Length: 130
Image (cartoon, one colour):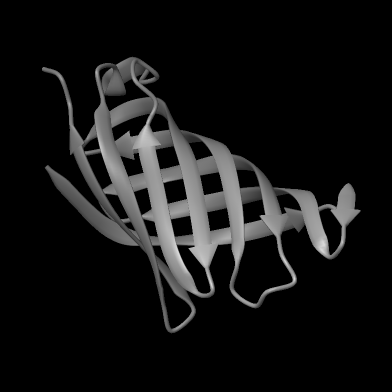
């Protein structure tokens, strides 16, 4: 199954906690609001690395999503792993196995995130156990 929609974010960045030769490590938390077939909110905790090379960075994050997907209510956890190499991105956002609760128990899948003209879009390919 596929769910396509948009989301808005509120970012809360902390100052870098470690910097060596221009490579900084930092923490950021996000609050998200999903619209569309995924009608939900989420909390994201991210750790990232920025380099002095424009467009090169990496991050890992854990995100708990709470809401309704395909008419079923519950929670699930997404695991993010992202790398940018001079502007070329590689991103993996995957449902943590067996993290679904309530009506989303048994959820599995992957999410793709795109930013188009400043607006965040998601494409969520998922399966729900019956």
